Amino acid sequence: MKLLAIYPGTFDPPTYGHADLIERAHELFDHVIVAVGANSSKAPLLTVEERIQVLQEISKPYANVSVESFDGLLMDYAREKSAKSIVRGLRAVADFDYEFQIAMVNRKLNPDVDSVFLMTRWEYSYLSSSIVREVAKLGGDVTDLVPEAVRPVLAGAVKRGKS
Image 1 (cartoon, rainbow, N blue to C red):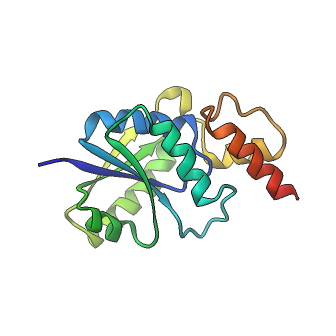
Image 2: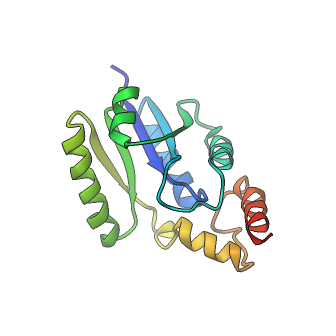
């Protein structure tokens, strides 16, 4: 039996922390779907297409990783894909509290899917997409925050947002 995992998120924008989790998840599972949430209550800076594009670039080294978008409930998407695991990253205790609640609701919605939590590497423990967006919008250097493929797309999205 092939072990399929979904790594869901908004990825707005993808950070080095996201890239790290993709790299580590690809070693644990037969296949990983990086699933970009298309219908979010958040107002994303990057379009779904832009996020997919840069995540595909980040994932190129890993033959067992694909990138898709999904709309609606994650557990419905997991059932549709026959996934058995959801991969989530944890940076701090506050992340655990939130992720625990989500995992319990997901378990209630689809008891066949387990949540797998990967602790972030310490060098990315401070990093979040919202911090990166703020730095980028204020003209700061994001070189050490996001992979190279993300930088021009992020710059274009910031420029688009200012016009």
